[in-house]
Image (cartoon, rainbow, N blue to C red; front, top):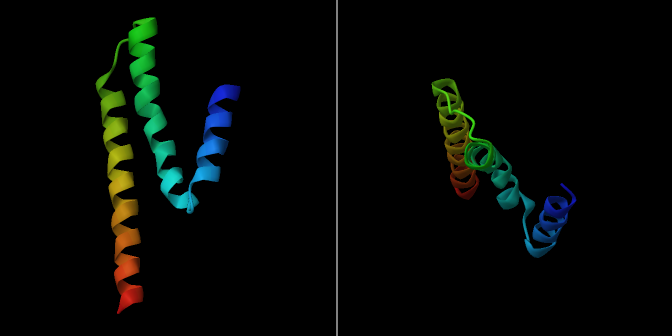
Length: 75
């Protein structure tokens, strides 16, 4: 866990805006699912896929709202 924290802090230092990096938090369940399947042989259930779908949907909603606010500020 310490290694990933160091990578996260380094990424924060490299970016001008932290909001772009914050979206990567939503990707961690996907990677966790892949690692659990590959290394532990855990079964992937339909409910897990459904949960991942809702995570993706949340990311799209967040991005849509952000773009909508940018357009409103420009007008």
